Image 1 (spheres, rainbow, N blue to C red):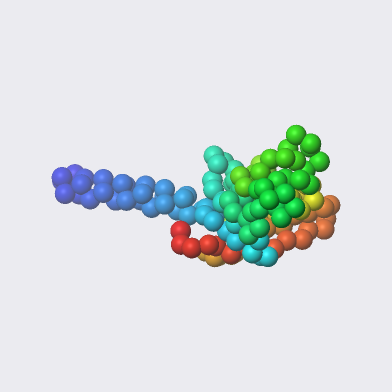
Image 2 (cartoon, rainbow, N blue to C red):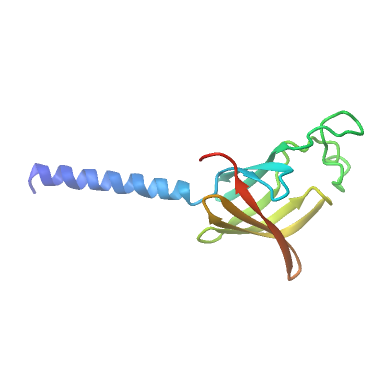
Length: 148
């Protein structure tokens, strides 16, 4: 094989590896997402083989009753009920379930419950997040905040 052909093949392999790596990075909806009600922003990231999502911002970050940061007051675990809501992990064991889909559990800070959950990436700016109680699922669409 001549040296130009070897160089071309080496570059082709390198570029295909780069493309594959970028495709893997783009396979998860990483970034900041605004909930449907607009009351929270959730930072979504890849955490090893699972998808993580934690509270990054709250519209009402200060509890008007106490003048202090909002806490996880609905959490049935008394030791967690006083933790600040900013930073609370909502996605639990969210594993890939197909292209653009994940399944696991989700923590609902509105009632302190943990529910079976499905997440579907509907496009670059829309993430469908569902919580399920038995066979009945309800959810909302989150909107991407800013660019990548």
